[in-house]
Length: 290
Image 1 (tube, one colour):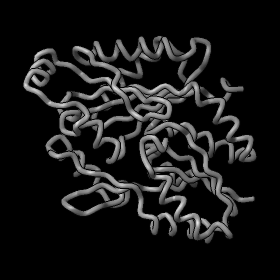
Image 2 (tube, rainbow, N blue to C red):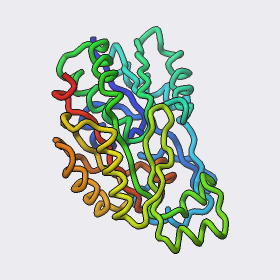
Image 3 (tube, one colour):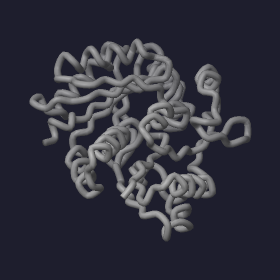
Image 4 (cartoon, rainbow, N blue to C red):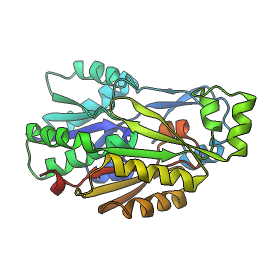
């Protein structure tokens, strides 16, 4: 059987990596001046990022069009695949799974689909895709692959830093008041966010400056990861590799790290976290899971 890995572009898998490794991405859309564009192939990333900090209100995003998903399935069939393994984000955060199920109904007699809920969002979803493809390339069956992914699930760690509370005010996640605005500005507060199992992003407090925020993330990593386990690392950011490097260096002081990847946040996710954000995601190496 020939199997194709399918996932959401909000998993932060870079488009170039997906093409090189035979992974298909389903793209949500983002509203720019009243028109919706696919976030990776139709949005100019550099232009979008340059305007991000001035966008008010924050652009709306939407799930993929069912017709687009159907065309993806039809292309997969055309390429000679018999099965597809769809690694999707938590439905608690998005109903992206709905257009995928609708599109699949049209081709279910030609293609067998396996739906695997990663129960995470954004970069915390990426390790499932990376390992899913690697294990598939190694000749493992889908049942064996999903067992490994289940084993990895409790060990995913993700936390990040936004440059200011402005983005949270603009998205409405925190109600802006004169007092709150003044306090966050005077104290140079840097919001910390966490990637939670089956919840998406959640507040992780704040640091008085980047140094304080990084220190809190390192402390959380010590508490939530295992000292005797080796991890791989993904740094995702929006034009702030410098902050990403600081996160990398700080985490490496407390945990053994194997491979490190640096990726840009996709427009739909970066849109929510703000210009200058940086996040660290840790996941066990395959050897550590054995």
